[in-house]
Length: 180
Length: 111
Image (cartoon, rainbow over all chains, first blue to last red; front, side, top):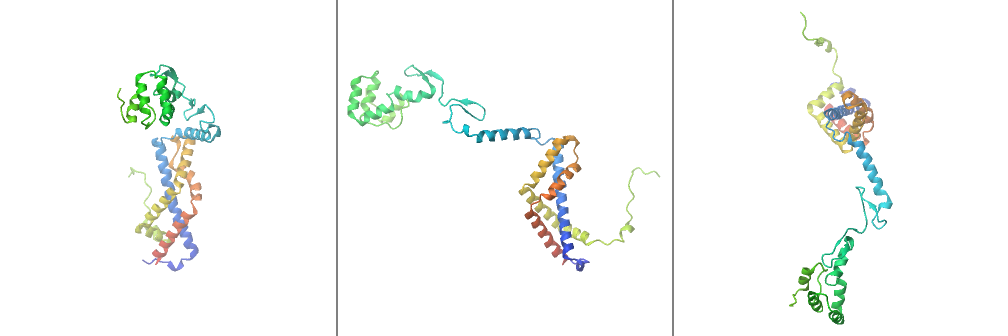
């Protein structure tokens, strides 16, 4: 396609025309964006319209809290504030009754208590498997219940596969049921 | 006869025949007819979204709307709000890319 006046085209007017066309495109796009924002505003489609400032403020607050070194890690202080503003003591302090021995136990100390309370604890059992003399000592001591003597007998010949979790668990972890 | 509609008089065809279409106008027609204008606009739109320019402009609009009140704002207002900042904050790489495309088109159209 040939256009009239093409011989008149110099580089400067070329650039001028190019810039003019670019300006045209940009203006169209600007009008589009403005029209879109106008529509969203008028129709109330911007769900964050009211919340934005509040959210900005809250997120700034959260950022400050996270960056605050005094809050890092439970080890630093007993009372750490979480994102909801609640504090939890590092050891759970609800007290309830142990179903085995009937004592009042702190929740945070319940697991170690159970270890010692049922089957006389992992540490004790592990020691027993290591030496037969320890087993004899345990047997001679006289266990409070007959079931316990069963387990202490089998301890010398078998190993615990996992930690003590309860009486039923004991039987399976030993791999063999002791006949009473 | 009374006119039922107030209408400006139709421009006389004779008036325009004295003017020759400028090179600018011819190029514009060629741009539109070949579809290149549409392609360029889509390209520019895409680039401006990618670089966050559109989001910046929308934030400017929202701030202005919040200040002035949702129901008192016209599209014209928003255009005036965005235009100076919008024209100035175009990244150079995008501007260069578009100018290059336009120049290429000019060369090919003029041949």
